[in-house]
Length: 122
Image (tube, rainbow, N blue to C red; front, side, top):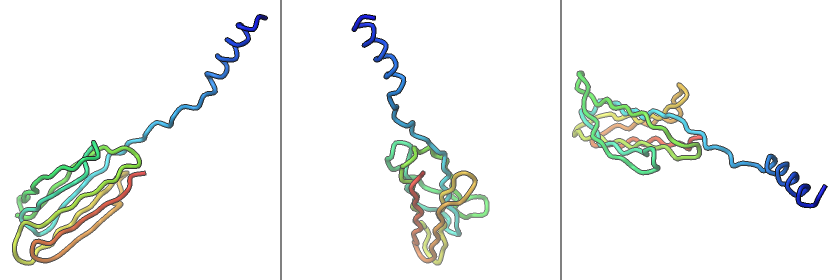
């Protein structure tokens, strides 16, 4: 065989052995904010590693009830912060769950209280 043919065969063989970068795994997580507050100011990590802000409004019982599903890449930092927008003694709960399990839970009580939950997604 000629040198060019052997070089070509080796190149083809080696091409199959070149490691490829691992694909990023993504997970859909759920942010949840509940509590006795009537409303809450909510900030959370979005799909682009940015931050979104929303207002959580009351459910029919007059208490804040907000939920959002977000898909994040493995290695991302998930967080949700909620501040009661209600005077008086209120409670606010912030949670992050994925895979059917609550992975982070935080609650706070008081006037204009704040709860924050955060976790690195594996």
